[in-house]
Length: 388
Image 1 (spheres, rainbow, N blue to C red):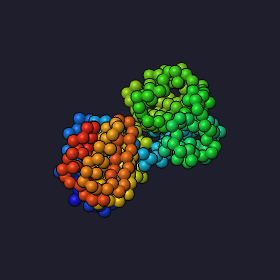
Image 2 (cartoon, rainbow, N blue to C red):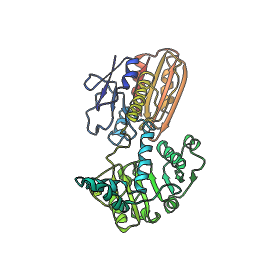
Image 3 (cartoon, rainbow, N blue to C red):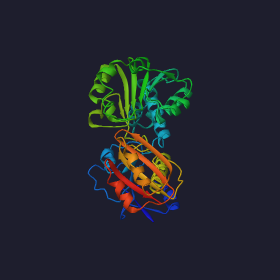
Image 4 (spheres, rainbow, N blue to C red):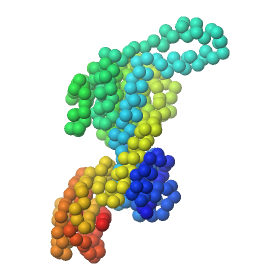
């Protein structure tokens, strides 16, 4: 029985997968092979030495020290796309909230409590203050066409909107699954100038921090609305509120409330509900559990944020998984040591990305513990796993 430590409450559907493979999921267990979490902050966390991997049931990994764990050979997984539909639906809701003064109208209607039979007449006389516009025929600019952005773009087309997409790093799969009516834009400023609504679907990186600022907001079409269900740090809040007060920006809807946005006119703050659906939590939990099991049992890496994806079917009697720095001649040194035992490598898969690299070597026979130890002591080796 292998133990998996959970740091947050996780959807019970994970037990379907863990039970099938003989894993025990618990919030209090000894020598866990993996950690499963959602929002728990692992910065400064005392990681048990037995842990091989961390599974994040969600896309964002800001709560996990991914680079630090890479140096220890601990793989960090996330679950991209598992909550995409949930976020897409919230973005469509945000579009409607931008176009119509729905939230303002709801708040006002609550003030009519106690007016008795006067309420219907008061509603009819007061509703004109909350008139808005439709999204039909309007232009939506989608910044980022990954799993979520693509779904938003396709849904907006179905709702009768003109859709412009911007993503210089779009994957082939995303492009294939994008509605052919989505127009490609290669210049972000051009997209901002053309769009009645702009929605952000890009990761939070040093290069994207504060990308929505006074300069980019100034490029937006007068009276446009901005939706941010990606990351709060993508926007400079002070610049957003200033542009709202000037009247150039109509609405700002964000899934990331903070003190400086609360109570600001024409800012709608949603309490981080993007992935808060039962379906999304189930999907994320299942994906994270499968990633953990496949890695622990086979060494396969899928959807890691600190090591390259690398997976293959098992072919030999023994599999060696080698984590190493992305420098020359590391794997050749490993294969030389294996060759000295006169053992054939039946299958080999090596992938690199950034500072780290990872290799799976299937062997026709078992090598000695002494040779494994020699491999561990090679320069630039981070971690070595023997998988039988």
